[in-house]
Every structure is written in structure tokens, then in C-alpha cells.
Length: 107
Image (cartoon, one colour):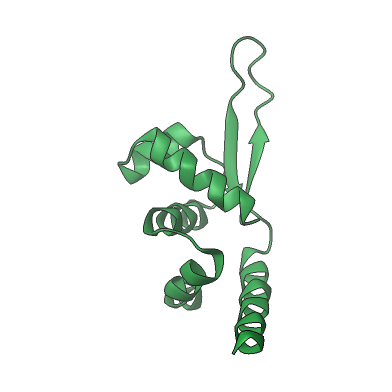
């Protein structure tokens, strides 16, 4: 993981209005660098599946994570995989710049 990205953890948390768990999910997905299910992520992070799914929803809403449906399973509930968006560092950089501009305008 980019050290600069890790150093900006608090700024990212503030800009996107994320909790510590949300940030941990995001950074774990960046570290894994592959699509994972919410079950897999909850086991890796040692937190409940519901907690992970709530964080993933916030990360999707923030445009940092994407959800894709597995094509494997034909019967039963679909299986979803979560992964970071392409060029996440650039996206975060742009979003942080926009966030900074908004803060400057409000002062």
C-alpha cells in the first residue's frame, strides 16, 4: 500500500465521513488487491459480516469500492465480490482536493 495513502488516513476519514472500521475495510481491500466476498473480508478482519457489509455499503456510496456479482452460482442467492475502484489513489487525491476547496470556501 502506498505509504502516502496510509499517512493520509485521517484526512480520508474526514473527507468521506468514514468510521475507523470503514477505513480499515478500505485499506484491507487495497492491501489484498483482489476481489473478496464480505464473508472473506469479515474473517480476515475478525469482525462480524454485518459490520463489514455496513462499511462496504458506505465505501460503495463514496465511490471507493465496487461490487460485482459472481457468474459462478446459478441457484440460490448470488455471491458478490468487493474490490477497490481503478486508480483509487488518483480518485482519492482528486476528492481530497475538492474537499479542501470546499472547506476553504466555507471559511
